[in-house]
Amino acid sequence: MSDLVYDWNGVERVSPIARRSFQFFDETLRDGIQSPSVHDPRIADKMEFVRLAAAIGIDAIDVGLPAAGPRAFEDVVRIVEMIRDEKLPLHPACAARTHTDDIRPIVEASQRTGVAIEVMAFIGSSPIRLYAEDWTVDLMLRRTADAIGLGVTNGLPVTYVTEDTTRSRPEVLRRLFETAIAHGASRLCLCDTVGHATPDGVRNLVTWTRNFIAGLGVDVGVDWHGHNDRGLAVTNTIHALEFGADRLHGTALGVGERVGNAALDQVLVNLKLLGEIPRRDLSRLSDWVHLASRATGVPIPYNYPVFGQDAFRTATGVHAAAIIKAEKKGHQALADRIYSGVPAGLFGRRQEIEIGPMSGESNVVYWLVQRGLDPDPELVKAVFAFAKQHDHILTEEEIRGVITAHRDRSLGGSTSAVPEQAGSPAR
Image 1: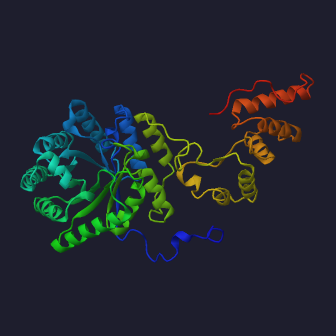
Image 2 (image 1 turned 30 degrees about the vertical axis):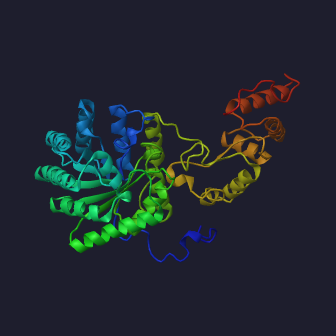
Image 3 (image 1 turned 180 degrees about the vertical axis):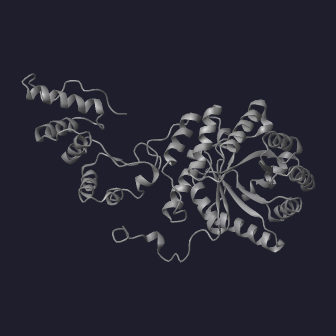
């Protein structure tokens, strides 16, 4: 395909985006379900979601906020037990305020399951948050030391999460980060909690953090956690990887508070296409996304990238003709790219050719052949004429009605080439 596609994306790029190994961290079952429009999934769906997350190569997953109540705690325990018993290749984490009252339930869940659950200890760090909460930096430092110390003392890895990092002052971050690292935090999580950052802001913050860590001479990881209020979450996440983050957060379908988090499925798709994760098998990514939709009650928009129903669907004559010609060359990779910037087959999808008012006869022929039906020229003309009379993509029922009417006419059972009623519009 390299001879058939000129890739402007790679012009002047002399190195991979990632300059160090990196991981993916899924927040769907914690941050994702904090959206007021999202259902908290049933435990069976949560468990299957975690299995699929492991299948697509997610490295770590936030399985809940156990301090939120008895149901949340028990769900955490059951999911962690499943990860342990099924030996899934991902490790569990739990969110907590940077407060000992929130750390204790994680310690208890860890002791019950025998698994070292990662603590994601979060605290607001921006001036606007400190003002609203009447917090002082000294108070925050004490809470940071106590909470992280409790987790580390109990043998748990701790990530220190500064909420609203992208609007926080460097002198405050410096003191918070120094305290967190001194008390055993193994990672720092930079949060664009309200979707404030642009790519320039991502570069500035991640680069500053990397330089700060290097100055301390310690081995501490850097997470990036972004929200989508400006529509930049996926782009910012990829920029964060380029500038030094080594673990990327997101949620399936980008679900989350307000307009949501970075869509982890889109991050995975883009990094796959950019050659950053060449050996990762994402053929079950579609299953993961659709389970998330069903379990949370969040519909997938018809035009959602890669996983929306129209992502690889066309009814336009010239587009369909090009796909059909590519397939006739016996070159499926060509057919998958001729009118698609994303190869459907990599992500568990396929190209779909429909019939509508903007279709050509080639659409009809393709549709019939795909279903093992004879593309008789008169039948093709009948379906084609019917499509031109309507303002929507024909449903299976409508097309079958035309086929039945044509067959009846051919047998002398009807004088009409098309049915009077052939179902309802597709949408």
